[in-house]
Image (cartoon, rainbow, N blue to C red):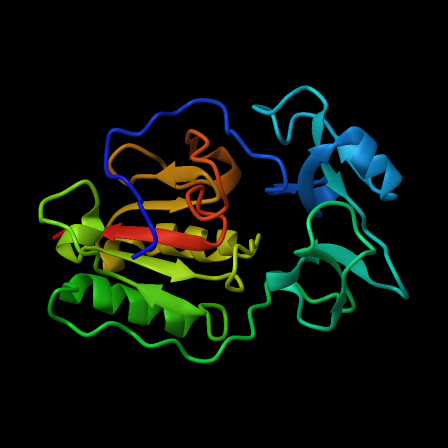
Length: 236
């Protein structure tokens, strides 16, 4: 298994969005954390404070219009065709021809069988996939490690709901899944949720929007910072 979602302790503080990672630009538009000069040369608009743990010159850059009526967003969230080279930032941040949001467009993922993956996690995965058809590309549950271990995956008590294209891609639509899981925490028997470098735990957090969840340390890449999947841990 390629993920290393650690169990407690977590290090909290200012959200450390790494360069080329997602952010929300003006009016909640899709953005990318890059230098202000790269944003300007790419025709984008940058704002301060949305990538606060990076160097002062790293800002959240967005470009609401591109190509022939398109908009710049993460490719995993594009319902239509997309073009590279028209938006600032990495190649996954592209000019999308669709105005639709929160798109995945994936086929039905395989749900892990009950066994090493506990029934509470399997039932949780089924409920999430049913609530968001086409939005979950793949579901991971168990990891080859001793139980109890450093992750709930070791005991089959966690699912990683992949909601971005494979190959180091990112998405901002995972927020909808993460907040839905939070609202349905009781029926899903949720222990905690992580998405987009933020964590929510029903034992210590109130129900609130993702942007006000507790922030986590920068672990170095899109997967480790949970920008391509929603991690859900369940009570055993």
